[in-house]
Length: 154
Picture 1 (cartoon, rainbow, N blue to C red):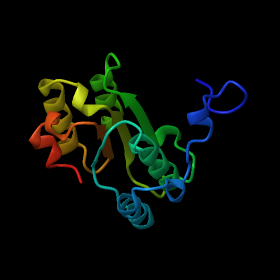
Picture 2: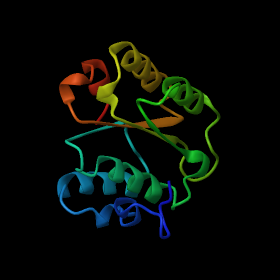
Picture 3: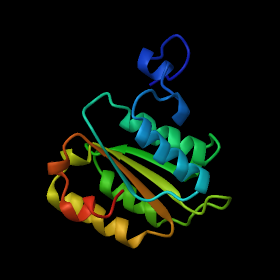
Picture 4: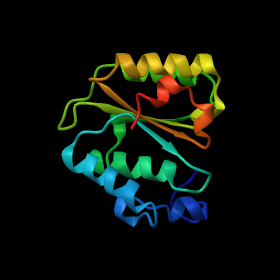
């Protein structure tokens, strides 16, 4: 999907690219900016209804963290994609990138749309890849995310 040029969707074309451009969510944006400033990002669970800048916030955080060049540092997936868990596992366990930030970031959208077994698998990945990878999950419903995974995220 084109994100610039005449064929871009309006919401993609005008999507904020920096955390400071996101309007509303002031407390959450301040916390995310503090993570970027310190270069320390915990595993995150961003909750809220559609259209509340969960994905945009994660993209802005990663962009600011890596200076706009996400390259091999970042993986974005939708929970409904086939082989999402296997792809995430391969990415999380691959060698960390060299540079100022010693970890990669995985963004998984709609965590609450996948089953308990898949969430348990993700929990194990979160526990096992702490030094090399950070996870950002988005979800609409907190009660559809297993407690063991919620407890491992800020």
